[in-house]
Image 1 (tube, rainbow, N blue to C red):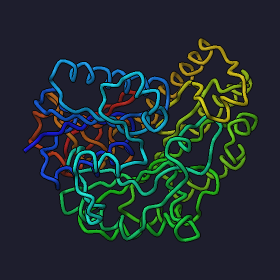
Image 2 (cartoon, rainbow, N blue to C red):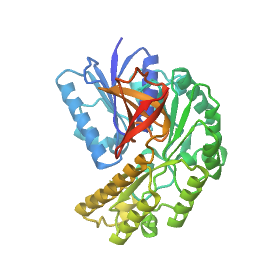
Image 3 (cartoon, rainbow, N blue to C red):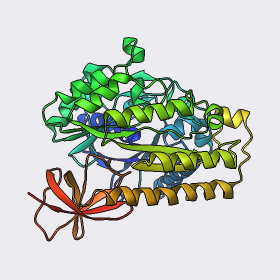
Length: 431
């Protein structure tokens, strides 16, 4: 049986793509390995990211290392897929000819045929999970129609295309049967779901259907777009007990001047109104957002307005990035990258310093609370878990002493929070 090592870089959407490919490879008789550094696999597939500069460089470095291994005879065949090769296939072929072939993020049929994998449509909902078996990402659509000024995703992934609801239900049922207890629903914009297929947004209906699947206990929603946010989604999040009181909704900025320059299609007033609606309907909601600083034209007044926004809203989870110009985007072609790099980094640091204080204060208010915890792993003397307010990989964790009692990965427990730090909580089991 021939081994194939599939190396995945980038976001959770890439993880899902790799898992679908791996299922097809396994069905064709391959032994499939995932991100393995110690392997005698002679075939390597690298699923790349092409979104921002650092991610591109990581992908290029990985390809170069694999190309060297091929020249040394350690690898027989090397393929590159994903976002980087979607954007730069011609340049990559010229610069790194050791790669047998390049396939983009939208050309799965090519890589499937190149490796002799199954093209059976019945495999469309099959996955070879690479996450811990108790949680999985469910990608409900591909691409994006918003075309924000800074974003290359529409150039890479194309226009928004929803996955049919029945197909998603089948995939979710298979995941549940395999032991998945938490579904993390992802897309470039999850709230846009269904508009292309059904003529209206149907994310709320999809979530209700997923809630009916036996075995699934948590459903978490990532990457909601603030503009035209569906009202029925707020109602379903408030009323369905399986849906985590958690929402990842990247606002990027709050200054009207910056929102307009970013082509964000909403105003500061509309963003604040949406946050008010969400927190009124779902009082214990954990809001996660992403902010972008140093975008062309961002003044100190714009940035201070953003700081005030963070101070006022007190997001439970927050990430911030410095703007990097991406060729082909509207901002790269129309705007001058006029904020110095050192100013961008200072603004990142100032927001994160403020968020550290907010996170510490939010955590301290949870001292003494008993919360439901899902155990993800054991690390040294600690079990590492999460509450419904935290997503894996990106959010904070609950640490429980191993010495206290034996806990099982993928199981839920009631725990009392005893200590709080900026981004970690310490707890003990109460049942």
